Amino acid sequence: MRRIYLTLLLSLLVATIGIPGCSASTECPDSITDNDVLFQTSMLSTLSEGDYDGDLTYEELEKHGDFGLGTFDSLDGEMIALESEFYQIKVDGIAHPVDGSMETPFAVVTFFEPDKTVSLDEVSDYEQLKQQLDGILSNRDIFYAIKIEGIFPYIKARSVPAQSKPYPPLDEALKGERLFEFHGFAGTLVGFWCPAYMEGINAPGYHFHFITADRMAGGHLLDCKINSAKAKIDYTSKFYLVLPEGE
Image (cartoon, rainbow, N blue to C red; front, side):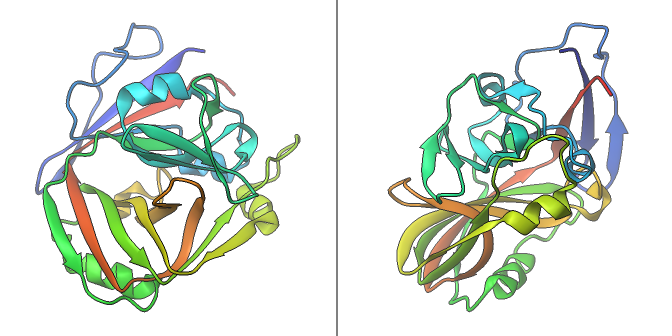
């Protein structure tokens, strides 16, 4: 399938939009050489409307990042990418290795190269975690890739079952979510912070997925507690969007 390629180039102070000489009618690069790029396929608004057909294979996606999150064809579970390993967390809560031929309707990845590492104080819930991170992320115009490693006294996560056509909108599909609770697990939170102007393209604010240290289980983060953890943060000033061309 042909795709439309867009690039948003963000300076440190002012967000500007540029469209390179690359469209559905011209040949585009297979990968991006600049690692400080957030690569995204499709838009969150499209997913919200119930377009869950996979468009990009994971073999292709891996060319654009080794760290990220997303979902699968038919909305079949949560994706988490960590250190070049991609996992599918289905409604059993188990992290299954991803085959390169599998497809995604929505995913966000980058090549993770941390610019800053900070210790997190004791965190009682997800809201407090976001407040601590807010005090660290000073520039609200760029993107941040965030990896948090530590011992988690409590994690609440979810996954969503595969949907059947005609697909329901996302808010309806989420009513069938399956919840998981983890107590006293070592693991990693993989996520991003996106600026407010990304409304509709991505979700402004924080979005995290969790995976246990043994890479056996996880899900989309809903709540957490932290006793001690390290947050590694990758400042990302460029955004690359791939839009499927079709109805």
